[in-house]
Image 1 (cartoon, helix red, strand yellow):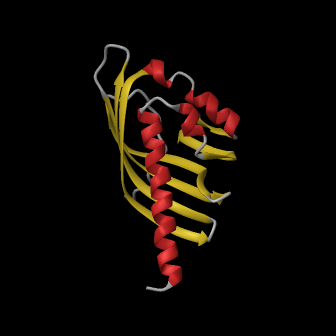
Image 2 (cartoon, rainbow, N blue to C red):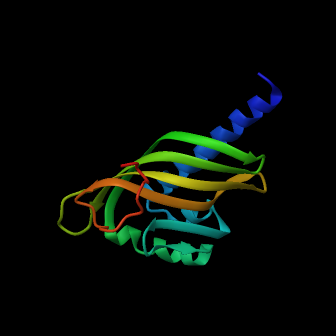
Length: 152
């Protein structure tokens, strides 16, 4: 392997680690650390009319996650990293998320895909753009979704 190939593998692992940290912080109800994974001018879209532009607006979307959910479990896989440069990449991954609500209702399950643009800032990979596209759900609280773009 060339030095560049080894470097790209190490950077890919760092990007995947950042994505896993996002899920960990979300599952641990730690929005403060979760927000550190985003750049100040981030763009986030979880569903139509549910997202944010800018870190302060994003932090507001995280308010109340601890009171809405008793617990969550986010599982990420199939990460594909396409480097644009040494400090920017597009990432596609799969997510399975289980949500236990504080209200008396069945657990909600989301099956979907993340489409991300990540950038390296001061030696750390961060989300510049994060879009959740939903494949399907079971007893999930959100009713409108970003489509995955599946061919008919």
